[in-house]
Length: 404
Ligand SMILES: *Cc1c(COP(=O)(O)O)cnc(C)c1O
Image (tube, rainbow, N blue to C red; front, side, top):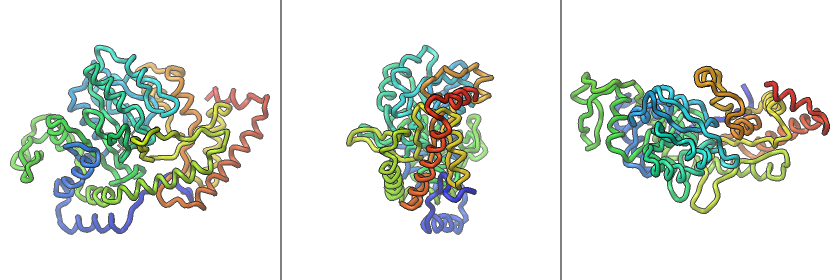
């Protein structure tokens, strides 16, 4: 157990009270808290519908099913993301088509997205990696021009804004994730947001065992009611409990404060690391109409370092009880993707080069100046060590890194 973990949820008495209140009602599933939580997330994203699900991954699965995507269809997505954003394409039997990333935002390069569209393309699955919403508007335009759907995997970007639009509002649907390391958490959970009535109804049914849809008392459509054992389609149990939704409501009520705390921590890192020539800091989207939603704080070593040195820095930080991680190894190079689709090293060189040099540093709301100072100091010692071991003409480090 590291003393300064990589992430930590921000849980207060408000969340604890909210969940104990829910327990006392005796209603533990499909109740008013689910409806309220869905409404809060949808409202924040500027959407008509919110559908709470058991995870962000489950939400992505249901959206692709709801869009009728299946075998023979292609979905364009990024190789530089958490693996769930591509796995959902495999769940429905479709083919992932990766495109390389923009080296600044680390999101898909829109030009490469456009070039990858074929007559088999059914959707573009865009990811706001590390909470950076850059390019989502361009992806929306490309999707519209080519008559394919944009699905926004906004699991890392709740509360972000781009070109004046809320994250979650760009695609046919957006999916938020509420695993314990996200901006807000329900332990496990997610919410699908959309303005598409038909897609929303389909997702409500498939998350609830494919149950028939019947009008609910509040005018919205709920799956279940009188038709509890009638199943219209193959469905799943991807519901989110009232207990989880109770936590989510309390977290959403504190969203402004939570995002502000994360901005403050990111600012502390930025201030201290700005002058370091060995590091590339996260870029925040430019302009008054854009707002990063800080998910993690990921720095990148410059290209005089390789994967070998990066891994040693991470190990060194951990040895000093400081959480650190290699966000993200490329998805196309994961073994089962290579085996199944024949992906190889070198196919997405920017994503690969970036992924060899990233270091996610501890990032959570309670980090204070003292923590940040200790982290930054330890990081400087680790980098100094790599510089000393790798003398100017010594390329052994580079060679070793290429073997990995
Ligand atoms: C967290 C995350 C998800 C979904 O994760 P769950 O753990 O299933 O909630 C999907 N895509 C990305 C990019 C993520 O970071």
